[in-house]
Length: 318
Image (cartoon, rainbow, N blue to C red; front, side, top):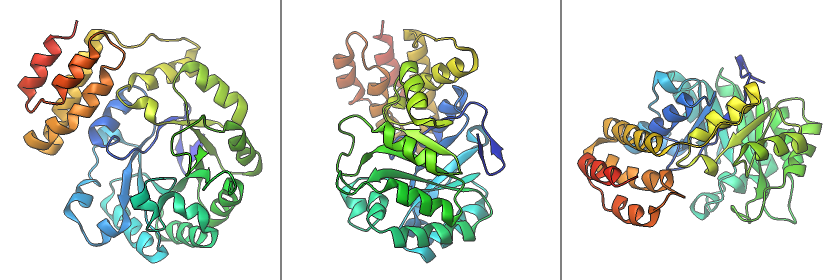
């Protein structure tokens, strides 16, 4: 599969997730074999106003490249200016546009999945993005707003007409948020009607899910979201299966401990001694899901404030 000049022989990508896919996690996913990682969504207004927190989100490391930076916004000129700034920094290889976020604080500003309600505006934004930068532009969208307004095929065609190089489709409506099972058959309809690559997203948790979604959708690429939270090993498992047909086991306890410490050390490096441990709390509870005593561990992790605190907790993991 190709996106612009980038070729991905094993296209299993890390989906953009707010509060999750920052630099440390993107590096971990790449180390596990993920060929393309997406950033958390970044506000066009935050970039254009040079908001300090937003600009920090644009920092990337060589170890996570190639990577796609995801923008959200609602005004063509504003989104285009933000895209130009990203390209001027050289911090990304692909520019993605968010038309899928269901969060109320996003959709109330006509952003995220609210763009699915306004095809004319969406087309203007995507056209402006494509015209503003030389890097490939992609888009991630839901199948529609609700079950009575499923318009993903129309929107995907508009995106292709605007010049985007690939469309990622999450097989749920905005009103579903993350409920029910993703509708993979609608993604197949999109794939059948587009000439650009379509990336299937939604409910890929295992190798068997990977097999089924590829069979049902016909898509050459998939994108893994929530199943990757606390589980970067999923990329090792999925890519290895596509390469060789081998089904790798899940992580050992020692691997869990090692990755928790490595993740924490990167958060300390990039976010400091105060923010780093606090952001690590949620990741640590995800890393220990399903293991014996995880409820006790969750309580301990949620109180951890230093690296030493985490080390003491890890020593309890058997």
